[in-house]
Length: 98
Image (cartoon, rainbow, N blue to C red; front, side, top):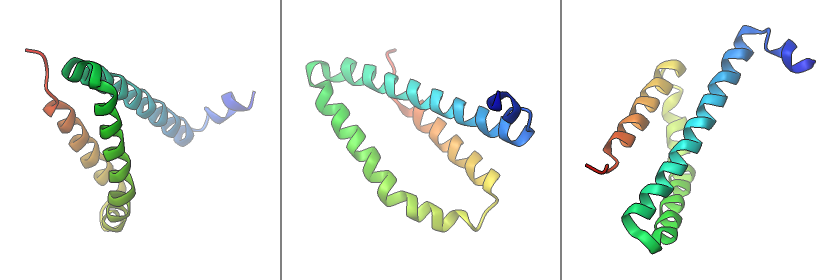
């Protein structure tokens, strides 16, 4: 079993766990965004989600090169932690049912 042998390497195990957690978080955020869009827009939720995902892709295409140009100046770990905190802050800004 090659997979279990790979998990014996500490660095690989940490990277693999980080990737799994990242995918889980992205999946949950996508589902939550879909539910929020349906809650806010009702039958127009498809159009809202299409717009949101288009903006997301445009941000990836245009902001990623800028972030890459800036990222080499800082510690990778610190830069990623700051980005994660920014992402968590954006989630907290999403409207909630009160």
